[in-house]
Length: 190
Image (cartoon, rainbow, N blue to C red; front, side, top):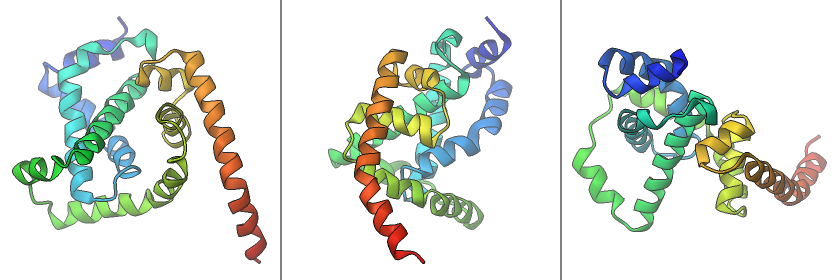
């Protein structure tokens, strides 16, 4: 087992390793969530849930399947997806009220800045709603989050070839859908 894998395996047991892991990855995880969620309180809650999930599942990381970042984005993807399912069932409101903490003004401003920075990605996400769940997930991880196809496959628990096919289909569908919009935009813009 390489050093990175050993460190990750210890994250669930060693508070010092967890703190180092948290400090190294908090901004990336928060940006990941802010690209998908527009409420700063929910971004903070889901980011915390991601790191709780990391503590619970650090032992499941397998270096042969991809990088630690790919695994972490897989955890974050699962947390965000679970929240979307909770919202659809109308249980999210009760869960948030019970455990929500007040954000300090400074924290709220920082998260709002990240949400603003993620606005273009959310607009693209609206166009991506036409994609299948599998195609969208691979596209998000590879294009928005910068993972390799191998790491995206690992994060989604699918074969690498499946991830490549889904990525190709998603890019083609977005190109077909967005090309008229891009053409209109470039004609209007001087």
